[in-house]
Image 1 (cartoon, rainbow, N blue to C red):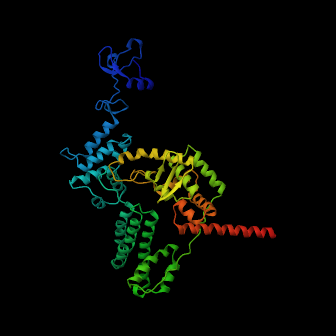
Image 2 (cartoon, one colour; image 1 turned 60 degrees about the vertical axis):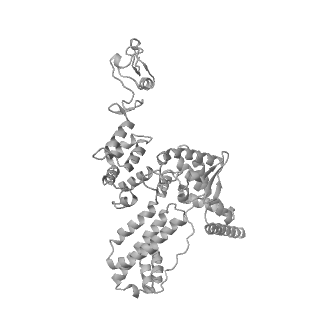
Length: 467
């Protein structure tokens, strides 16, 4: 008997019946009239289409077993101790991984990633696995991935990693500074910068600290060490530091040196320096825009182009239609979607944003699509993100959103600014704030900016009329 084609394979593996010769219930071959009703062994072909361990039919992966059974065996062998037992915490991880929707995708991860070995090392001592124990390991991709996996499996509670990484980063940077610099910079870092960061985290109700906040903190500490090094080079002590010295240091560097203001205020308050002033930078108006016709064209593409990823279409539409920030869009969760079956609204910090029907349909599809990413997450105290990242415990990052926008030809910042300007030109500031979930002060600035442009346009038109 010749090879079995794919069509016949798919049919016979899903229709096991009793063989007319041996009576065993197996998939029947029956490709030739003489063999009709006979199983593979009876016609001289040893074909087996069911897993020899679980008995389920499907594509076999190795040694007559399906991919899920092979994965279960490999995980059990990897995570077991010498006595054959598995640490209770690792047992939760094993169960979560074994329940993966695509078992085959985990084999390359098991072979290449260092995260599984890190989990074994954590469990080797028999002590409970905690965030603090993970913090003692080097900050690597494997460490981050192992932590995400433990959170997903419900072993560790969810925490804001952007917040928790900052003390580690601060200590690493301070370790490179001279001791006399550390004596000044360490209190500033711990009792001012990190304390302020935790206060922001608390005011946000425990929500993730934005990457911009993290960048500002790091820049402020770097500028502090940079200033202290410059003072050493100039032979000036901190107590002898005067306003002309500060002005000269600011003029010699880039605009990032303006971030030294936080240290100057803190040092003056603690009588380490005199009453020095860092000039406030002027508030810059937005400068990146696109033509409104282009914005509308990009919005239509988000609504109608089925070739784009669904999450890109939803994020782009919300930014191009309502001028929402990308970081705010990525923070949306399933709980922010208010759907009564006929209309759909998005809850923006207590304000309801009504979506037009076509966009509402896309949001519903994305919500249902993202639900599959939450399955592994049911035991963990995590949020059901509307746009989950590589780990379902975290949303997509703004950097990835910007990368995809560029890949598909969208101008994220320009489109958002143009949408916000169009709304500000037609709506009062209070309505703009309610509609977009932004602060009243920010809405007022946009309204004033839009009015300024309108006033300039009217003045230009008057000049054209006179001429």
